[in-house]
Amino acid sequence: MGPFIRFRDVSFWYSREKEEKSQSSGSHVLSEINLDIHKGEFLALAGPNGCGKSTLVRLINGLLLPSMGSVSVDGLDTDKRDNLPAIRRKVGMVFQNPDTQLFASVVEEDVSFGVENLCLPRNEIRQRVDWALEQVGMEEYRNYPPHRLSGGQKQKVAIAGVLAMRPDCIVLDEPTSMLDPGSKQEVLTAVRDLNSRHNITIIYVTHDMSETIFSSRIIAMARGKTIYQGNPEQFFADKESLRATGLAVPPIKQLINSLREQGIRLPANINSLEELVDFICL
Image 1 (cartoon, rainbow, N blue to C red):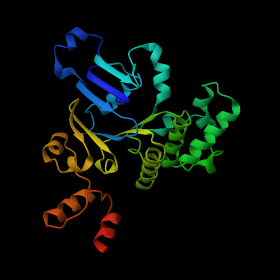
Image 2 (cartoon, helix red, strand yellow; image 1 turned 30 degrees about the horizontal axis):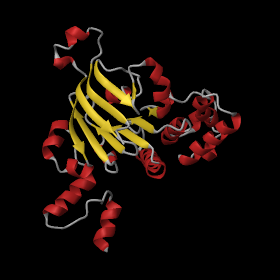
Image 3 (cartoon, rainbow, N blue to C red; image 1 turned 135 degrees about the horizontal axis):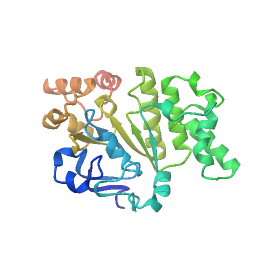
Image 4 (cartoon, rainbow, N blue to C red; image 1 turned 90 degrees about the vertical axis):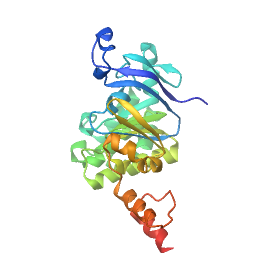
């Protein structure tokens, strides 16, 4: 089976003057991106602010179109207007600020909005809304006004609204950057469950490396280019790539690396302090 999402020689700049800009690579927001994303992956797209992460993911469902090269989703090219409705049913987007995605007077209406636009039977809409709220643990808040929810709860409602559309893939663009630590953990747990329990492809954009630990693959970006593709464990040990991105190793991984340097053998799948303590105490 081929890749679900494919970038081929993709460059992008915010200008209509293609001929002029193509002669100056320094003006590119993205430059010569080649990337395959497979169904069921939990992909972390990491890099410092301004490196092109948000621009890249907006190319996936046609919010932006490449200046050069091609982007396809499940074999459908994004630059063909007729493909966009199908692509946007396959790929849902969750943005940084949940307040920009919530507008109804109660949670249930917000989650049902996108599904109602699919013109589905009323009973199927109800089933999808119930299921989506359950998946993110927000079913008991269905009749709450969104403004009474915490930041993490609002973001989970935004995820439920996308989830009710039954996409194959959900793109989350810095979804926890405006949240407190507790709310951040709620959202991360919900996203991990969607990937592990329902095999939904997750593309998770972040500059916080502690959020990439549980991903199956990291794409690291700097200055509009991808400079690393691989598993998190290898990336955290790749000092050259870390230096190029200016990103820091998560504290738990720093601790594990220090213990290994002292000759303590630890398995690669330890991703939290609790797991480390459990292993040491065995």
